[in-house]
Image 1 (cartoon, one colour):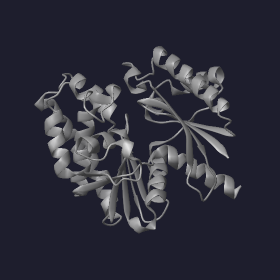
Image 2 (cartoon, one colour):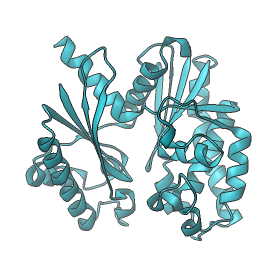
Image 3 (tube, rainbow, N blue to C red):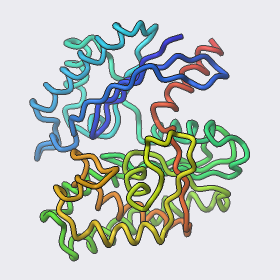
Image 4 (cartoon, rainbow, N blue to C red):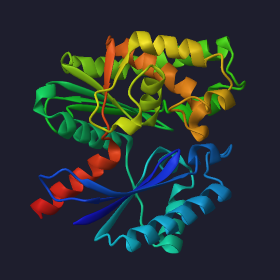
Length: 310
């Protein structure tokens, strides 16, 4: 079947069209991404602004049209942190359904963590043993651990790179005191979730997904995306320290000129590096392996499993 998956995240609205059936690797046919940065359209009252909602509706219309053009048998659409946390999320969802004809399923943070874990497990297989997955999004950080396809423990904490940049950094580049204060906050927020993950047993492999981790790994010397998804990519704690020291002195406009850094997310990279370092320290790991599959693939795999069983 040809399946379209529309991911409304804190930074982007991303349509992925794949040809897939259960037991086979989904084959991408189209990847269409629009950078809306919805997390930055949350007003002082905690609502998604009208401008943010307008751009979301327009992006949903465009994605629906492209899914139709590419002959999708089904369009599965979901939203994550930015829409989930907005005080007016119900009204926004109603608008998108009415004006774009796209009903959005709002995933809980735990659902995000579990679906991402499923994708990571399927990518690496049973040989990964007891597996921990980490995913830094725009609004939240998802963590999960388990020995099977379903995570034994899964968490979502409000440590997304866009959220933290907006709430903690006033200067560009951020001052040392700002970075230190953020690190203290992240350490405290992660203490209990990280311990819960470790209580499930020491991990055999710790895996990272998401654009933020890919950017940090690339800055630390990992292979570029042009070399394909099957190249092994690592992010070491030492490499992350060196990258953080380097980028902490750069304004976002200069950082955006580096290979692997997107213009729209350059200002978030430092906050993402702080979260990545704190997570590695909390879990006492010196190395993360990057996985090209994440939440969207988890949604696809879960949908295929459901269709097979129905």
